Length: 268
Image (cartoon, rainbow, N blue to C red; front, side, top):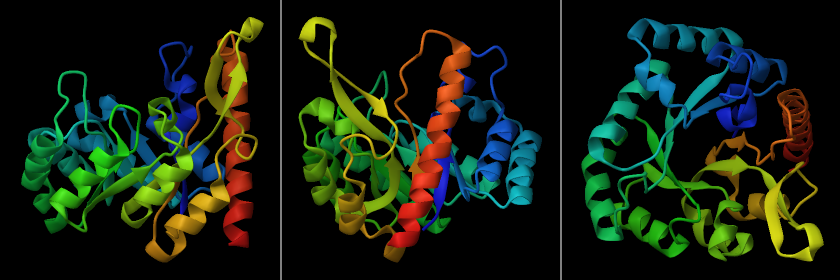
């Protein structure tokens, strides 16, 4: 088990709103400075355009900093998953996170099982594990039906219990159902706040430990240390009205998450 950061921990600093978006090398250096051991390049399609030479540079930078790489994408079409398997091999990554749906493809359970049965054996042959993330577009029942339908030790669940709240699934229920199949954890806290005039609620991120995420319960259920499951820091940080303040708070939340998780991981 190791602690890592995701590109989502730098969401605003790599966005089009940043005066100078961070590069992968920048994020790797930040990850090293914070003492994290893993960096998940997640939903970062620019990586698909990198030449072999650029991929080798990213891997060399990570290796020099003592950081293990992971990847993240969306979709279950075999051609796309095999592209990411090739990328993973070039980067030395042993984990790829994906989601069932893309903007133009929403497979039902049977179709998803069939597509993954085409792709997952190649992952197994190369020693790479694929994790499907829990999120609001797919019920936990359907996600688990896909994972158990494929029935491979190289396919599991990327657990992010906050995502499923928008589907009216309780985080504790999502954790309990998926725990035996979890191969990666996204750690972010979240809370509801009242809208102006008390008309409805906003579900947004908050500093780790200040919201609704039952971190201790999640860890007790999953047992990441025994299974070698990495914990990857992400955020749901709302835009703060300007880039400078948003970036400052993003860094503050990341530092807080790493400190908090290091303390919690040492105590378990």
